[in-house]
Length: 241
Picture 1 (cartoon, rainbow, N blue to C red):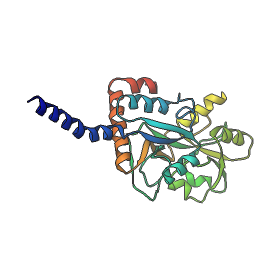
Picture 2 (cartoon, one colour; picture 1 turned 30 degrees about the vertical axis):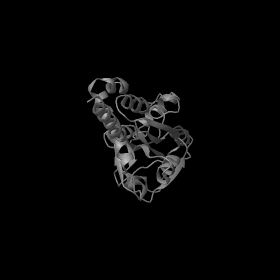
Picture 3 (tube, helix red, strand yellow; picture 1 turned 90 degrees about the vertical axis):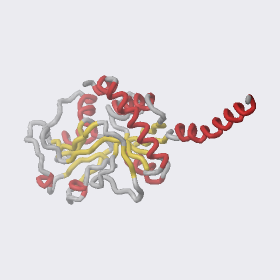
Picture 4 (cartoon, one colour; picture 1 turned 180 degrees about the horizontal axis):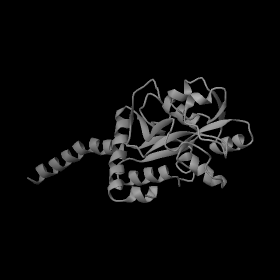
């Protein structure tokens, strides 16, 4: 009887081993677009904190690499990173050659047109025809903007676009909320005119992974942790709600 029990115990260990490795296989490389206030190299951005807190409540462990937007796309497209963020499965913003799966959305980011101080807000993309429109290099703005035929002038950051607008080197610029408010705060300037209730594009800020067993496991584990921190109040504290 003792021998049988030992054999049974060994069998259970062998049987359970593959499932243990599956539970631990959700570890994932995550390339994030470096965005002030959201994804920062010091790990103190709001989304950095959300990912960390959600991961602590689940089986996923993201290895975050903060990079410029263009590099985040390249890492994801070449398979160097299993996931990228902030991103989603909306084909208006992303069109990869492989299937993808997204996590719960951390917030709904909105694209606005910003004009010079003292000017009237603009909310119609067609009104920008003939203007020099500042954008951040590598950031997706949606087909409505990218296929509009506008004269888009790329810069490395929102802060650079604010300076270029003030200097008259561009006529307006496009930027995402909440990113842009972090830039205004960092520069110590008041928010520039924009139509707060009329964004020109809306983007769900999620984690996007390849639609593979590993990618699905990472998303499912993150969503589990996200639901946990949403329920216990941690998410609200991080987001300042």
